[in-house]
Amino acid sequence: MGTDHTGVLIVAEVSEGRLTSITAELLAVGRTLADDLGGPLGALVMGGGPGEVTSELAALGADCVYTIGDPTLAEYRPEAYTDAVAATIAATRPSVVLLGHTLIGRDLAPRVAFRVDAGLATDCIALAVDGGALRGTKPVYGGKILATVAWEGEGARLATLRPKAAEPASRQPDRQATIVALEMPAGKPERARILSRRRAAAEGPVIDNAPVVVSGGRGLGTKENFDRLQELAALLGGAVGGSRAATDAGWITSAQQVGLTGKVVKPRLYIAVGISGAMQHMAGCQGARTLVAINTDPKAPIFQYAHYGVVGDWAKVLPAFTAKCRELLT
Amino acid sequence: MHVIACIRQVPDYEAPAGLFTVEGSPPAIVASREVKPVIGLFDQHALEAALRLKDAHGATVTAVTLGPPGAVDVLKRALHMGADAAVLIDEQPYGQLDAAATATVLAAAITKLAPFDMVLCGRQASDWDGGVVGAGVAERLDLPLASLVKALEIQNGDTRVERLIDGGVEDAALPNPCVLTVTNELNTPRLTNVKHILAAAKKKIPTWGPADLTLPVEAVTRAVRIRIVGLAKPIVDRRCEMVAGEGPEDAGTNLALALRASKSL
Image 1: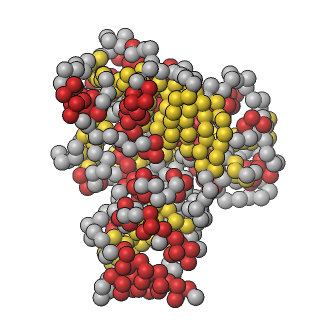
Image 2: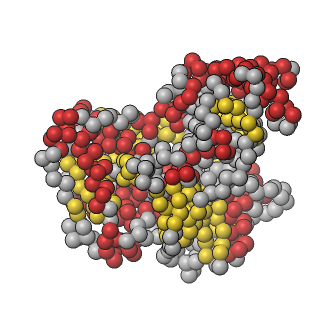
Image 3: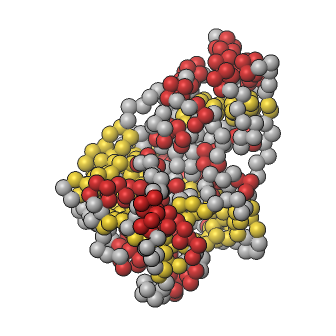
């Protein structure tokens, strides 16, 4: 590890005043690495917000919570966040810096890595210390291959962690942390100026933490067909997702896309309809407790990952399946 | 207006996992012969975005790739789609490159292609899936960056983008020159066309090496921050219980019963 760098820093994500689920996962991985490397676990939280966030970070394992309460950081701004994280790394000199492989982390981590001249491994599914050195495991080639990576050079090592790849840290309510308030560094004026943010009106429940996800792919053929998944999802108290093909066809929004460049979901039940099972898609759903596939092609790769499979025309299988589910559940 | 599209040659990302193996020592990923080299998925969208700026604003489009000599094929394809010029940067003198070193080389090539107004990259390469190089090019060239761009237009000389954020989009304005990394939502890449194929036959694709870029090999080697120390095929040991019936409707009914029996429903 870098000579005078010690400990682990995680970059917390806060949404509507609460820590997001990736933050608890970062703290769990960070805690193990900090213990193995022999240093403290720090957490950086930007944008102020309620004090409960700092105590929650302590309860989830942080030894030290760094806060930058500047109101310009209340929502993610690429350039200001880059300045703030880079300044925190310079001030606290961590040996490892972890961010979530979320839409924020995907943008922020590369910017920070180049700013502080640190190695970055993105989308890691595991991080461990091996013989005193950090090793990351990262799916490549769309998940067809797993690569183990090592960091070179002095200074901090950066990684982004794939959501839901690690169990979240467990909560110890009485745990205390040192709170350190840091100043927002004087940055240059924003060059890529943010003009507005528009939240897409969600079509039904969001998939992120839904207990059941019903997903469709290219095999469904039309938007009308795709919309027939809604009935089953509503019946099971779940949400509708889809493959990249479904996003490209305009049947779903990007926020509902499951896979490598979409969301990672880990529901109790994942039902894939008309999805061939390309690795890019499986990267987002193979952690489901029960995975069900309905596909006309018996050779579709999805059946290698499914617990239950039906080979058949979804247009005939699905209505009967939905009807039987309704009967069993009411 | 001069737009530079950075594109990378990758093994066909749609090819099934079974056609890839890990072989040798140190281990390397070997694609079976039937896996065709293609332009990376998101890089195709970057190239298409550049060509649309040519259609709408008369931009000159240069396609750049860093790769082995064989990667000239993706540059030919870029010319066949309508790019005006293409440059191959030979990666061989540099040895194993990571994202940081790749950004160093691309930044040097882009500097040599100046003046330019915009650099377009895919959001991530379809082989290593890093999503790091675009930001590196911006940081090395000290240019404004927008990532995950899903809509793009030029307004009063500024670049206006919509970029993906959690649950929606963000509108941003960037002064040119700028660097954008793009997603598949941005556009649908065009096919090649006969007029461009004929025109391309007269175009030379130069190959640049360390001397052309005035970038010594040592400077690139020093920029490497990540090394691959192991490769393996993921183990999938799941056994799928196939549910059948007397026809598809019956199979659907039986699937519900099977899920109920295993308490999945």
